Amino acid sequence: MPSRSAGAPTQDWEPVVLRKQAKQKSQDLRDPKAVNQAMRTGAPVQTVRKAEAGSNKKASASAPAVSARKLDEAAEAAALGRVGAEVRQAIQKARLEKKMSQAELAKQICERSQVVQEYESGKAVPNQAVLAKMERVLGVKLRGKIVGGAL
Image (cartoon, rainbow, N blue to C red; front, side, top):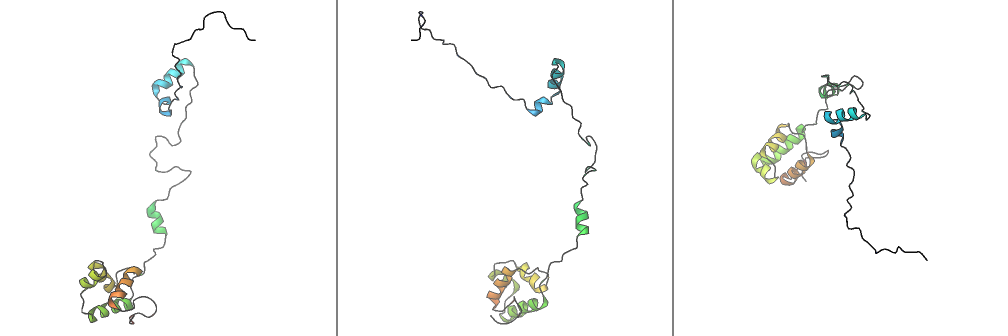
């Protein structure tokens, strides 16, 4: 059997404080005071020179950057298709047969009157949803091979 000490049992009531060592932040390591302190104590100090530091160049020589303007000039301009003459005439003819103004047509298709004006003048880029709304209100086919026919 294990032997016990003959003295009275005692408890240590002193608090024990455990502290976690705080990691130094990289910003603290670059602080001139911290660097000087490390040099005085003989701790290793690392110095790194950044490439192209202090120069006023926009891009490094190893990876030249191409400006957006040069890219735009180099690429072919892809023109967006405009509303064709058949569609323009079909919209205008159907609208006039129903005795509607451009503003009234725009109100019925829930668009601005400028949209209808652009479609009739041929400046608009065709949107299938807008053409479908116009087809429904005007009762004329505006999409597909047969343009201007009744629905």
